Amino acid sequence: MKKFLLIWAFVLTAIAATAQEQDYMYPSVWSDNWYVGVHGGINSKVTNNDFLTNLNSHAALRIGRDFNPYFGLMVEGTLFFGDNKFGYSEQIVKAYNIDLLGSVSLVNLLGGFKGKQRIFETKFIFGPGMNHIVGLDTDNNNDLIAKLGFEFVFHFDKIAALEFYLQPAINFNLDHYSSRTQFNVNYSAWQLAIGINYRFKNSNGTHYFAHKDPEIYIIELNDRINELRQQVEEKK
Image: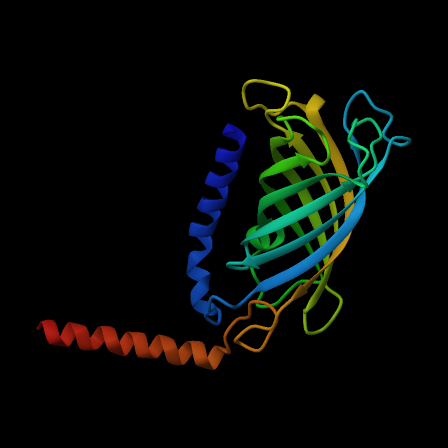
C-alpha cells in the first residue's frame, strides 16, 4: 500500500508543478475530455507457470476523463475467460475485475504539452480494484487487487477522436492468500491487450485539450494587467 501512496504523491506533485499551464489552454467544463474504450488480449500467471502455453483471454470496457493533459481517471471492467492454471469455475466468464485507475501521460509530463495530441504517447496506469470469481460456492469470492501498467497510445486521425493503444500490465491479488495486504509477484498475473478509445467532442470544438489562440491569450493578459492597475489605483 505504501507503493500506491508514493505514486499518488508523485502525481499530485506533478499536477501542482504543471498547473500554471492551464492559463494557456481553453477552459474545460465538466462534460469535456470524456472517453469510452474497449480492449482485449491475453493473460497468464507470472510465476510457477509456462505462460506461453497456459494463456487465458480477457475483454474490457472502460470510461474515463482526463482532467488535464497530464492526469486522468477511469473505471475499467474486465471479464476473464479460460481457466489455465487459475482453477476457476465452470462458467464461461471465470472472473471479473472492476478497477479505478489513474492515468499519467509521461510524454506530456516530461516533455510539456504542445497544444495538441502527439502521434505517439506513453501513459502509466495504476490503481486499486476488486476481483470476483464467478460461480464458486464460497464466501471468499472477492479480493482486493491492484493494477500497474503502461499504455502506448497512437493517434492517427486528424480530429484526435480515436486513439489506439497497446497495454502491458500486471495485476496483483493483495489479500486472497494472506491476512495482510501485500504486493507479492507469486500472486499476480500479467496481461497484454490492444484497444481503442473514442474521445467525445469538447466545448472548445476539439476532442482534446488545446492551447488558446495567441491573440486571445495576449488580450486576457492585458485585461489582467489593467485590472491589477485599477486595484492599485483604488488603494491609493
